[in-house]
Amino acid sequence: MLIRIAREADATAVRAIYAPVVESSSVSFETTPPTTSEMARRIAAHQEAHPWLVACSDDGVLGYAYAGPFAARAAYAWSVETSIYVAEPARRRGVGRALYGALLRLLAVQGYHQAMAGIALPNPASVALHESVGFTRAALYREVGWKLGAWHDVSWWQRPFQGAGAAPARPAAPLGLSALGPETLAAALASKGLPDL
Image (cartoon, rainbow, N blue to C red; front, side, top):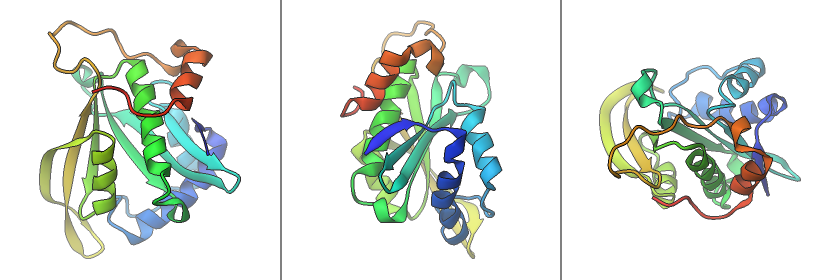
């Protein structure tokens, strides 16, 4: 399995993974699957500051993970919201953990301080994955989404990066991917394990 930076050309494969989730589950609160061109736009829109990654094998794209801004206001610049989706046949094979490990390592190298993730409930597999990579539950919003004939809760999960809780000092702005250099980027994607808490 190879984990790499997603490209706009991956939009068809990414959409193929995501569309069934949108159409038949409450995992995503979107109700209509985005088009391939919309997925390509999403991949390209924030790629410099907030990476999208894909896990690939000879069978094609197995899953994808990405980060986005946690919130729009300036003080949130050091926090990101993360998401991950794995193709049905690739689930329970370590793809999600490998993707999340690569994404979290890259975000740590970029200088982010906290990663957040929202999980629509019930979703025991996602809860277990997030716990396995160091997220802890931070909040529970009750009945905030209506989908497939039912109200759904959303739990919010948080994972600090190394240095969280340290004496406050204005941090440097998070680095864009182009500022990391090819060796640093390759090392973050290729290494194993998770960044320190």
